[in-house]
Length: 629
View 1 (cartoon, helix red, strand yellow):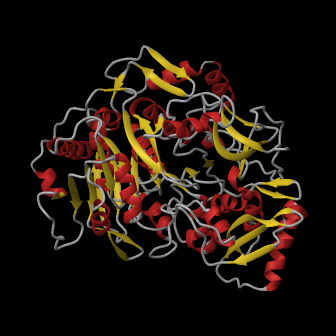
View 2: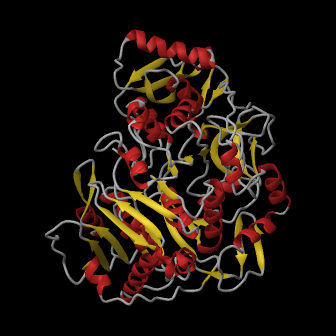
View 3: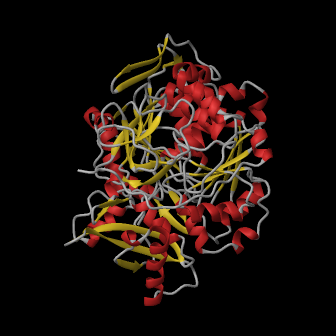
């Protein structure tokens, strides 16, 4: 059987970095730096690790017993020590670490010194509850500073945190608490979403009924008068921290000590608990934040993710704090109270690095260019995109409305990889829609099912050929499920994404392997067809699926959200088909197009095509605990 994925997209634009961007970049010559890092990956990672502080050194950089890896073997360290003590012991103690803005514009600011003290108090409070190294704590909080404080406090004493996004339902929360067997839950009375009050404590009450491992529930009370708490099991956060000492030495931990479990179902079935560890994860998130975003001392860094997702773990909390950055953290949605929300925050706080998702960009595209034009975005220097392939039209729009001179770091990585693996660096030429090339020390390729490298522009499977420090160590309680990632294609980590590599070695992600559509013997990635639809002036967002077809095998069906000011009509549907014909050719034209008002998405913004397909075919939709709505 031919496993080749057909590539139809004809994107040829190349955008050169400005002289100013290139001159400022940490890595000036990518080709030279990459070659050196691949010639001696252990030497490269060891040099990076030495920029951080270790309590005792490693005796081996890597121990690789396929498919199990250990990094910085024999070393002791603590990621929270590197995020806090390393800065609080220098002039940075008075530098702003976190600026937080609530949905209602409430503001709270923490210097490194103050964050250090709060984390120490929280770590001592956890110890006072009898928690010890290796115990699990579930954090179910809205996007407030306490989320960051609780994560770092757990890390400081070797307790494993399991952050659950605060939009999850009680059954979804319960299944994650049960699997982790958490002893403590940290939550809040409420969260806010588009002006609505979300009663989180009620969700926790429902979940805890079926979670016998839970001994204590700590509640951050945001509303006055505060909700009643049932002592002694339920504790008020402020009372809990009040009497605690501001000194709590960071526990020296073996490099391979688990840091957190993060449950992901991605786009497939039962949630799996991805385990990351202190040492390697610290090294990977530190250096990718520094090099990809060209982080400088004076930057204001704004990542719009939630710490409930891996992007929030790696690129709101750990990566930026390891670098001593100033982070802007904002509660709420990009279009509430109006579509100027993020642009306003960028102007107000002088944001220089802005990391967002293609889904959010397309949402803002729907409202047009007048909104970003209202704001002064001149402080922006570096842009980033994460979550799924960014189609060239959304890339172009984002580039244009922010001033046309800011490079977009289109980053590819996963919960399982821990940190960014394929990405531009600010000094390299960009191609709209391509994640460009592998990060330093990362050996990536596009291969067939047997693991053979494919020629330029042949679509195949994206793989990573060698271990890297921030890779997950296992799936919690399910090592066999971990092995699948390394055993699907021989001797490679298989990401589950289809991809092609162009003649410059730039990688173009085409969607999930599960979503490939087989039309009349051609295998087509969903991302290309969706991108062609979004290139139509009327379209804000699109998702496509394959439906069984008597003669062609599968037919393409598209679901399309229109931009404001456009109406569904027969003429419009025909115009959309003509657009795909022009962009990709006859084979990719959808047979059916439904105009819809929303698409099923995970709460981190990924479109769940399997849900669309299951509904269309009248099948069971499976686990939808990560679904937004």
